[in-house]
Image (cartoon, rainbow over all chains, first blue to last red):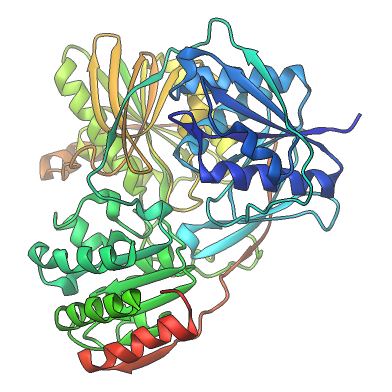
Length: 324
Length: 250
């Protein structure tokens, strides 16, 4: 019998997250390349869109169900997944490198005595074995790594792997396994949504502000520009450390590493650690007074002028285009 | 109670990374090393916890690394930690090996509470804290921005996509720390002088079998500098046109 790959899918409030479909489709592709059997597993209580998985390739879906597992519980989710993986002698486990995936993956790895390939941005099987590429130093360098243990736990960076529909998907086989007496020693009791509309880690467009914004009172311009584009607001370390913006918005080596389709840097000169965190963005726009600022060395387009004067005009021009 | 803090000696975040001769690691020439920034929050939280609990609570700093890691241990001692232990191994960089060495020592010491930074800024591994916890059978809460420990009970807030989760658990536990949890104190002159006198215990540890093998290290493909379309707001229409028609991103 072929070895198995198990896609562990993330749900929140009973809905599978976008990253779950990336994981399903990646597991499906790896399964065909490495001759594995692919299954998906969801831990939670009621999950409404579980059948949507099937159009991404995997036909067998295991729902590990218990009312106490509706919210994330690191101990409970780990035990549920590890027990199932042991029962079915699964060799490969794959998750998304989200907050939940990062938290859970190493625990599963210890439970299965598996090596852990985390935050992979590419998975290559052309040599017959799995070689992963992952960024280190927040993207200043990449390493190619392989896992020598028989059991392997892999996490893939969100927004990097495509979730593609397969042609003529077969009907889904959803198997519900009730989990009795889950281990919920550690559990989430509440979620506090942050005020910002969008998280930089999940946004397709990011508008970031730095010291060139001159003060926290001018960040409404960054927010308006972001609003006109449906973008998330980001910030440089300098303005976070100065207390102008909350840390959750920080982009860079001690903040978040992002790779949106469009990154607009406003009044950010581009310290090495900031560039590391955003240089893999598809398109970069820099607006900065200093034409010699390092940010221009990686920007696709730039305006070397006064940020505070330029942003209002930019907002107007974008609104014009959007209304057409 | 004994509290362990795990710290890592890492290249400064301002480092421009170059590939070393082996093609698998960075060129260490001219690189300045610092305490891993997230570990400073771990040290601070351990000290705050000690101040709160009082009694004979002891904060022990642990690091796996070479002789040079003593600098980082000493930094934590200068902030106020009581004792330092270097688990000496020049070649152990893999999280599993590091976690194994740390968890073995933590078990020997009998620490019920362990603090680690939520990730190292070199290999960006976000797993060491969880590995230690699982190896010890401890609870673990990661990416913590708020922490309350009351007797045996832990209530913490952790940072996730779009907000914070409130997590409840129990000691013994490993907590991984995120920026925002606290404001790490500066070492006082007195602290720095006292740290010089504190003995850092050295214990050699064996390398573990490698689960993950690094085959190659590469630098990202250099990005071509793009176009500066102007020097004031009159260039905005041109910029928007490029984004709309050429890049097709808006």
